[in-house]
Image (cartoon, rainbow, N blue to C red; front, side, top):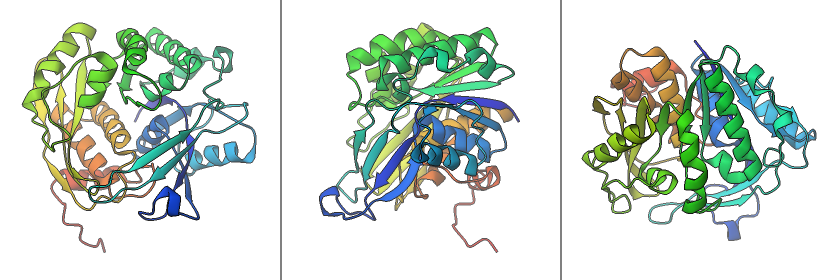
Length: 340
C-alpha cells in the first residue's frame, strides 16, 4: 500500500435531524467532514498510509477534528495547530423533489488564513506515492490557493502522482475566479476528477448532458475528456455520471479515459439515498486506491463507483467501508442480505 497525502479543510458539520428543515429544527447532529479529509478516510480504510494536511486551532473543537481523523486511521503528523476557528457547514437533508441545502460558515478558518511557513511541503511529500487536493481548497481563500500551488510544486519535485477533484462550489467563488486559479494549477495534475458542472465552471469544458433532466449520456463526455487531455496532458480523466431523479433516488455510474481508451462502469440505482454528501469524495478515494492497486483502468473505475455507491447508504461525510465490502459490491453482490 502507498503513502497518500491530502490537503484541505476539515469542518464541523451541523445537520438537521432526519429530513427536518433549518427553520423547524431545535437541534443538530454533529460530525466532522470535508472533501480531502473524506478522501483520506477512504484511503486509510483501504489500508494505505493516509495523511491529511491542514491547520486547526489548538482548542477542543480543533482537537475534536483531529480525533475524528485518528479514529479511522488517518495520520495527523502534518497538521499544524493555530488560528482562531474551525470552519462550519450546516446541512439540511432534502427528500423527494426538495433538494438538500448547505449553508457555509467557514470564513477566516485556520486553514483559510494559514501561511506557507506553516508547512514544509518537501518533507510532507517525501516518499509519498500520491497527493490529492480539490477545487474547494483554493476557493476558500487566496492564501489557501497559494498553499495548493506550493504543495503541487513539492509533489512534482519528488515525482508524486497528483490528482484533483475539481469540485466547483458556487457559494465560494465565481466561475471566472475559479478558472483563473484552477486552469494554471492543471499543469501539475496527472489525474483529473470532476462531473459535468465542474468541468464547465472550473475549466471551461461543457459536455452534452442534461443533468437536471435526469439524463447523463456517457457519449456526451468523450469529446471534453479528449479536449482536456489534449490541453492539460492528464494521464487520466474520470467523471461520475449522476442521474438525479429526486433528492432520494439517483442513478450512478462513471467514465474514465486514459488518453487512448474510454471505459464506462456498470450502473447503480440508489434508492433510497441515506446521505449523498461525500459521494464524490468516496469516488475520488476509490479511484486513488484503484489506480494504485488494480491492473486496468476499468477495474479501478469499478472499484471507485462501487465505493461511492455505498457511501450514499452511510450517514455523515466519511465513507466507512472496507475494501472487501467494496469488492463484494463491484463483483455483483448488491443483495443487501444480512452478513452472518
